[in-house]
Image 1 (tube, one colour):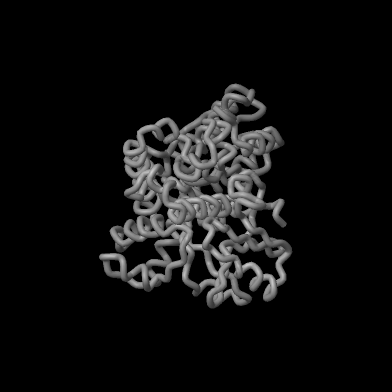
Image 2 (image 1 turned 60 degrees about the horizontal axis):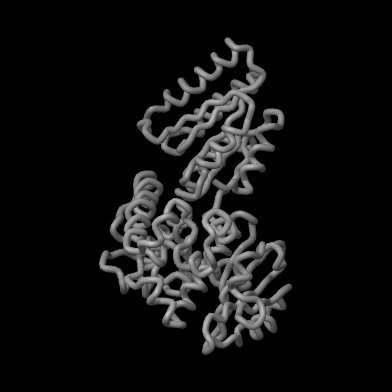
Length: 394
């Protein structure tokens, strides 16, 4: 079992004097609980690990009871410090207000209780953190697994990663692809949508959201207007509803819409989205064809590769805090535009021989980016790109 790099960051923070609540967030099935269990086993200080997963949402008193029990333990055993870890915290209604009250009481009374909260719904976690716990927390975001992590853990090569994505829990099933696809759809996708979107947020048209997700996965790496999307969906809706649902899917770490890069913020937000999965398993699991079939068709495999690179970049953008866009003007297009501290990086993925790269020249003339990169088999290959820290591109 490998250790993710965030483990040591979290361990260092917990070993410091009590300052902030540590909040670990990220999509389901990326190893948040596993990482904290690894931490639990490495630390010498006394700890408790509890999950709110099976607790009724209205049972706020459960949180208070757990907290008070730890306080009694600290006092009765004269402990110098104690660590309380609570998983799936977003399941408890008004959790942030209760945590604020309890944390502030401990601060006033000098109770040496350190706290780690875990959650898989970034939307609800961020809302609670900003509304009630401002100034009292630090966050660690766990992304989907990168190629380097899957290679280290399972010995995968780049083609295997491009098709099967970065879900460690599904790695042992890839030799039986139909079984792997069923597992991803039933155990990973369905639970993520049901638990992190449908149960925790009001959705008036759940069938429309699920159809949008499936279509968005199949079109990963492609630009598609919401109007065209509505034309392919059976359930009625409007573009505002679709945009809202896509935002919810993004907060669950499943599917996002990369916006078009322009000089004006308003035009960025009103552009047609470029659909992008956060994990390429979400694309290939929805496809009726197999990996062996897709590899034989260069244009099809090229789209898989482009989506794979896009998933790597959107995960890293969350982790490293840079923005990601695409650019298109008339017949000119650039696959990815990275922006950080007023610096621009343009990236074009030449996945097939026939794909032109005129967009890079046009973008360079118009916006004068810091760097431009062409990902092809002659210079920097897509396989090499998966091993690069995107911050190095700036």
